[in-house]
Length: 273
Image (cartoon, rainbow, N blue to C red; front, side, top):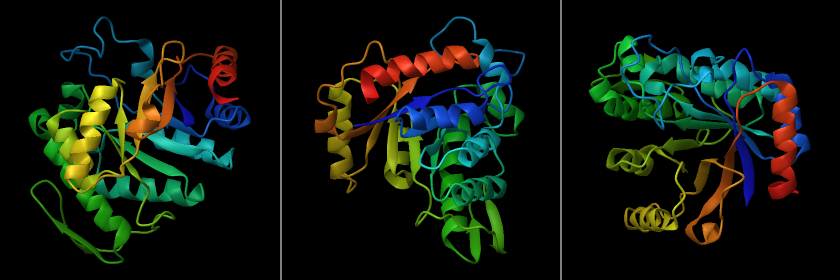
């Protein structure tokens, strides 16, 4: 089993240049950093899990800037968006950012994606929240075209560009693995059609088995699973190997350097070493 960490990067939390080496030193294999471009003041969409929205959601540092700093200060750590929100992003710029991260890190980028829970946020980017899943699917297809074609062209309902050149190309072939988050029917179809791995934030073996069986029926039997955002104090990994969970990415509360390093020591002592 591999072990990684999910941690919000903000202007008030541990610096990326400290975090990356700390993770490598403790034996973690990956870092996943969540993304929000902004938090609309209206707050119509309920917070994940209910209650007030935690402070760190409001203060996120750009995910690709964060991961580039981590790339520059590490040599083995895998660098994941966890998750990025491509429906809100310009597709050409995002394709270039992912490929550039993969290049400067020597092929360590993981592209975790989702539709996002905050409907007002996606609306502010000019996207109908009801269509954000379809927009995401089309943008993933378009980015794959950009990453794998010297002369890329795409014509869809939401993405449309004539033949163009866009470099660099990713180091990983055919491109950095796309980790799809979500468990709705639409998310699972996205995993089947565009994904290389699944991020799941609930950990019942029954669902893992069901999705594994469905993927096999759909011709994708070997898609690896990551248990995403797990509580290191309350997780039972019995049966994870059986259903193809290759990694546990533990949730770590965002905080100042000393608090985060102490927490990483606790998790590593129990799970990694």
